[in-house]
Length: 271
Image (cartoon, rainbow, N blue to C red; front, side, top):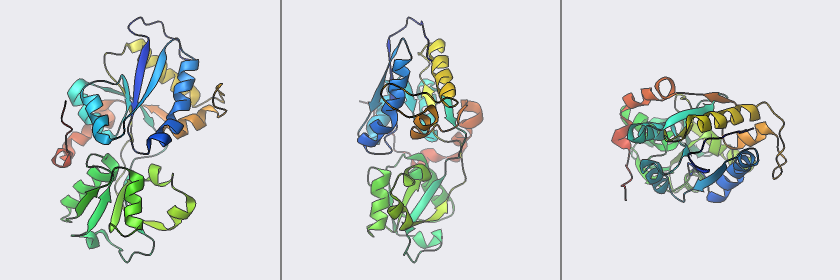
């Protein structure tokens, strides 16, 4: 239970990386938000943007109190405003994947040279940045096309509008069984610590600790909220924190500063 007496503010926003359609994000995250609100003296509000650029502008302008973001977004947010990573998922590592139709004749990533590859957005970490940096490093030039979401990228490859699609396992596994069976993984990157839930340093330490405590308690509970009859672990699985672990910037994300990913980043312009 989140018990907090901090007097700084009564409401806190939680912004979520738009990997999926807005309706899917609300479906996955609202039950967790409702749980926090039902067990807190505070109010937590879900903030969802329609585009990755608007999401980036949000944390670059320090608007959200809490933000669920990609590993490289974590680097950007830390450098810009000192956002602090709190929790990530210990059950998996984040790997970028290149998907092709099962019937595709492609068998090696070298065969993608000079071909069109669909990506969700330039700054999607696992599904775009990490993959493009690797391809560039090994001398494979592809023609990127940015189509907005992971699902759109997968369908561009399926329909032959691109030779392959960049993605990550978490969104690919949300597709139907029939769709997954029609696709195959051509390549996967080495794994890194996945997306963290981070907090702006203006949020009182007591509030941060209360949220962390609530998440860790949920992972070991069979809590049923008034609005969602799912137990705690299922609520956390939906928000990609299946086995929550506490993380810090220096140990889990700072090494990404050495990958020269900024060469591939398109920085959102602040309004």
